[in-house]
Each structure stands twice: as structure tokens, then as C-alpha cells.
Image (cartoon, rainbow, N blue to C red; front, side, top):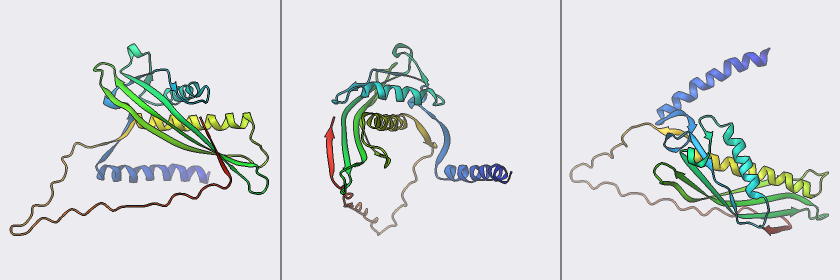
Length: 219
């Protein structure tokens, strides 16, 4: 009873606070939608350029499952849809991290990369032209498990689901800037020079520490 009461009070309070803040920052809440307000999307066969079989089938299944439950998006045939999506998978690398004690596999680290092409059917315009997309996904093996084909299959399914979600996130627009003119820079006073632009700070992040006893497999 208390948990239900907290939910009814807390959720409306959070919505009342976050929505005005988003509006004050120059954004308005909007439902996810496809570019140029299209509603229909067709998916070309996925092209798999790796040595791992059935990646194209897995990615297509994951995408269709996600898009079918996405509001504002309807899947259709190429000749009937406003947008046509073409995907390519160019790389699938697998790094195994092993224990230093008994060389047992502790985790599987996948790196997958490809491209997105999105075409507007009516105009023939390419809204995305082989836009690169990459993802790293980690699968921790339970202590009682060893690396088996079933374990790798389960890990790969999770990787393709995450890759599909990243692709859909590139297609959909959640927030739209309001139609406001950009702010004008302050006018320089007479006899004074405008301040010089500061150079962008340079960063040199250190590489993440490597995994112990790792081996890499390319697909």
C-alpha cells in the first residue's frame, strides 16, 4: 500500500519537474519519430561482410522486433514506404578474457561495426549515406558455465539486440529544438577589440587497461 502511494505521488512530481526544465533549455518533449515526419519504413536485406554466419538474419530479426513495438513507426514494403533502410555489417571481433589461475574464460567482449544508409523514397535523397556505427558489448560468463556453442549463441543474440537498439536510436528523433533564432553575440564597445575565441581544450584520455590473458578472434 505504501509503495503504491509513493508511486502515485512521486511519478507525477518528477514529470512536473523535468518537463518544464527541458522546455527552458530550448527543447520540447516529443514522441520518437522518423526523419522528415515519415511513418513508414522498409528494411532491405542486411549485408554481412564478416565470416560469422547468419549475422544478417539475427540483426534483421532484432530490428523488426524493436521497430514493431516502437510507436509512430510502421514497417512496410519498399514500394509502399516513405523510407528505405539499408544496413551493412563489416566487422565482428571477439576478445576472450581468461583467468590467470586456470585459463578458464571469464568473459566474451564483442566489437561490431557497420554502416547505415537511409533513403527517402519520394525524393531519392539519402538522409544517411553509409553512416558508420560501432558497438562494444561484454558478456560475463557465470562461474558454473564454460564457453560452449550455446553460450556463444546466447551472447551473440544479446550483442545483435544491442546493435539493433543503437541503430534505431540513430533513426529516431526524441527531442527537437524549438524554433528560436540563435542568440546574438554581444556588440563590441567602441575602441575595444572583441575577445579572442579560446582554443578548444585538448584531451588525451588514457587507454583503458587491457584484459588479462586476452585473445582476439576476427569475423
